[in-house]
Image (cartoon, rainbow, N blue to C red; front, side, top):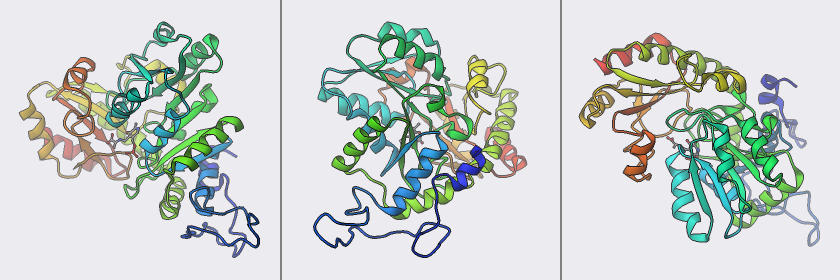
Length: 381
Ligand code: P1T
């Protein structure tokens, strides 16, 4: 099946009991057994639930994997991956990550004896300097949140595997979605999503996803998910499955609108810099073109006026873009990373990588582009 068919049919079958085209919301925690241990494949919903199974099969299909897992949040999915590791193991991660990911790595897992190296992944060869006998995981976000940096998934996977083929490469594919880029096809072992964002697509659920292409790895992740308990509930699974059915058409419009907004901002006299890999002026444009089908709906920019006051005034001016955390829904959102989504990164670290007070992040929705540009025009005026 082509990708645009997989979003709708991937891993799906009609409900065996009734023929229902959409899987019912199996709002049941437990399942009758005819004799101890004898059941119809489901015993307790932490281990498996039929609505979740339908979604997890679809997750696997859209990322060209064999197994998918649905979690209670994106962070619960990341937590599951990190629990594959043991004290003393090392992780090489990008230096620009969602603030909550950075917070989990540094404030939760460092105390359990994991060591993290945060490095610039834009130059693939950088990674070789940080891989040693303890390295077990490479953690990539591409494009990154919020600076839209691009890492070459294939090149980095090749470098890591050449050093040691047991090193796992995991990609947070939240910003790109499988419509634009499929890391498992490029050599990565694990794909992770905050399904809260484009997969769900309607700002009505919080969920995480993992997808893999290896049965042993799937078994380990399933054990951690089952034993740790961070599963997605059946109602949210139903909503995510419904959202994914339109992922490809939503993404087309996100990409069109994202490009139009980036081009508009690039010419605006009050804007110092635009971060969007689709612009030919972007230093990562060539790698982005190689591994992505298009460039997505996330656009960040910096104002020439670097004061917090100028940023706040602009943010308060927006009328159609809603000032809110999160991204990837049909409606446009605007966010101030330094104070909102990335506040958990110490100020000194933020400044070092460029998350300054003048940085504004847009999640460009699928509204009429004329209305979005008009809102930007008045907010910046
Ligand atoms: O919020 P949650 O579903 O737990 O997902 C965490 C997460 C992981 N990875 C990336 C790239 C993300 O952007 C997020 C969540 N991000 C936001 C809430 C935000 O506004 O950036």
